Image (cartoon, rainbow, N blue to C red; front, side):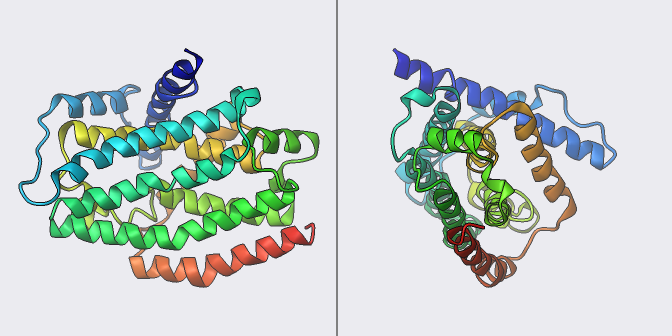
Length: 299
């Protein structure tokens, strides 16, 4: 019964979806204000999902039907699982398990893999192009994200349990207050933008270029599951950043992360895939190695 409550109610599916709806509305509202528009009503993200689930789901005639259908569903289930683990570390630290940090970081890769598989399974050239771009993104930013997590692991004396990492920072100081921790936070934030598919890293979707990329053939409930995954990840990923670098989650920290995401979205153009690859491997990856060296040195 407790497991059901944790996964489906709090801090799992229901809580993550509701907070994700708020975060999506907040993001769209602030973006609208920056662009001198009114913006959507508070429940617009919810209306968007309900409308998708009420529409017909069209399955491409060619391609892999099973993979096409299962990709968004698995993406949603895994996103909720990650949000549950991250939330448990903050709200129920006594029931976390050793090594949950590795599990969370590992499972955070799966929604991106589902986008790749879903796009590639539709046999649409534009979807395949988007899937190819997403694959290159994952191969580039994932190692940088792991390096930033390694800095946290070093700074917290080898802790791999999220609740212990939070407790360690409350007893000492947040990881971000150190030189290596600040660099790692910036790197983790940049890669988080890529994980969330936000500008300037919405290269796989690129609506103005490839009409949505991997999502181009999705409709109805299947597209709704992808949309719900985005809502949930908009909770799970900022929560994880707060726990790893800021000493835990509270409303102010979460709002600050959201505002940073919004500011980056509205002040940067979309990168080309070649520009991102250069930026990731030539700029970010060497910096991530420097951050690890600084962390080892105690800086």
